[in-house]
Amino acid sequence: MLTRRVIELGPLEQAVMDFVWDRGGPVTVREVHGAVGTRRGLAYTTVMTVIDRLWRKRLLQRRRVGRAYLYEPRATREEHAAQLVRKVLAGAKDRRSVLLGFVRSVDEGDLEELERLVREARRARGSDRGR
Image (cartoon, rainbow, N blue to C red; front, side):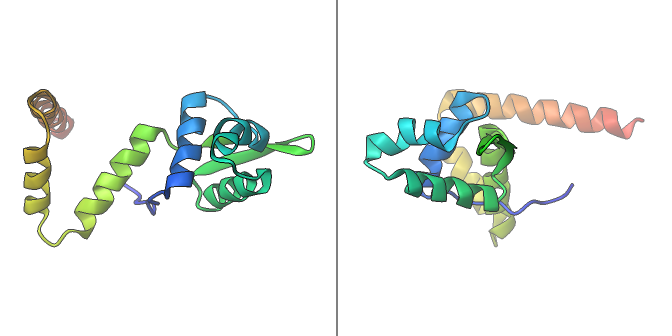
């Protein structure tokens, strides 16, 4: 598996990405400014700079339509979150402690779901080996 560089987001970058993810389709800078920038009292150019930064960090892809660009996320919100978790584990000296801290922090419902997912992953790995 190729490991991509995972980018942690600042608060404004997170707000922009949340809007783009929630939108579920291409967005323009004007749309992001109307939804995120206006609420925060930001200039259009500030929002444009944040979006450009997210594009340069390869979190957004863009395509030109007329004189404007349309932006879309390169990964889903869930894929991005999973990449962050992998980054934390990769950087940990003691992965067991990190995993234990996480497991202890989740509520009972999430713990049961995690156990179910581990069983599923083990079954899938077992069936992959038989091929």
